[in-house]
Amino acid sequence: MDDEYEKLIRRMNPPRVVIDNESCKNATVIQVDSANKQGILLEVVQILTDLNLMITKAYICSDGGWFMDVFNVTDNDGNKITDGGILDYIQKSLGPDSCFASSMRRSVGVKLGTDHTSIELIGSDRPGLLSEVSAVLTNLKCNVVNAEVWTHNTRAAAVMQVTDEETGGAIIDPERLTLVKRLLCNVLKGSNKTREAKTVVSLGATHTERRLHQMMFDDRDYERMGQDSSDEKDRPNVNVVNWQGRDYSVVTILCKDRPKLLFDIVCTLTDMQYVVFHGNVEAEGAEAHQEYCIRHIDGSPVKSDAERQRVIHCLEAAIQRRVSEGLKLELCTSDRIGLLSDVTRIFRENSLTVTRAEVTTRSGKAVNTFYVRESSGYPVDPKIIDSIRQTIGQTILRVKGCPDESTQAPQESPTRFLFGGLFKSRSFCNFGLVRSYS
Image (tube, rainbow, N blue to C red):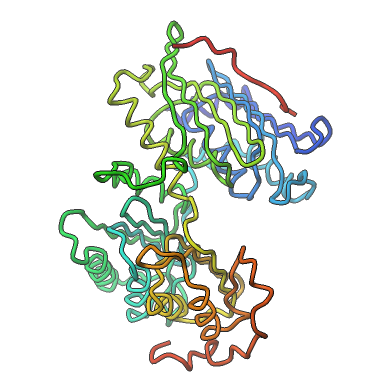
């Protein structure tokens, strides 16, 4: 009945998307008007974020039964969006054509498929964990085609898409899937008996980044472990106060700007079952300022100091999970079985630990990004990186953001690495809320 009522409302008030490349000097302005529903803000932000658009400003209003959002967006180079394919995709994904195709995407980002098996992992972080996990998958004849790994507050979470080495498709044998779960869970547990490790195996895929937020939130990674050793100057400035007389709680956030920041915050507020009624977002230079008027899904503002502290800690965690700690390394080469296991083993043998990783396979090419740091916490020795690049291949593994990269030795042939010979195995430019709260 709820679905039918929702469809009727959308027939009467189809969503409207206006894309304007004229009114704002340095950004494309996207306005979305639609009937309101729980989760619609996350749906819109997720679509823009998945296109790798930078949201520099946003105005959010969803009081009553109507939702209106305005975004100023650019590409990664700070330019307006002029690609007709991208603009058409935005129109189709958010406009009237999207009305019934996805049943309003009640599970945001969930996609069904049978070409791979999804593995979700969460457990205690430690040096060499990704190497151990990928080695187990290789020994089980599973090929990692896509993966994303996050670490935060002593915890590690990963969503990995694997295929069967022989068939190239999803792994469907129940006994084999049970074995995969058991062995990976053993790796995740390690010697830590105080925190639980979980392994979930399923067909198809989820929206990886949304799922990682949910996994780490459910794992309570926002709980501070004893004396917090993180640098206070790097901590996001998050504050929550109640707006007297309006039954809103006002969340203000000041932190370093970065890609996908808005998505991470809205995702966490949604998973905590808060509704954003009004919001302003502005990124100027290196800093981002965000302000939201929220209520819990039951209609109440934040009720206690304990709830206020929980909201603050959860939003801090949402911001920090994706912060890239360590040196950025990019690997690009032909994909093969065991590639991730081999590369991460080399990192481990050179005392490097992976703090975040993105693994993708495109048309037979592996395009992987790793953020690494020295296991003992010291800065990474450039000589170690040079040695690793000599082993893997200068053209295969590149250091990003390294001022000395252009002075590296000439690239030698990477043939031995490619064939596994080294290894035994294989215009809202200005806007603001009028604030009067205490």
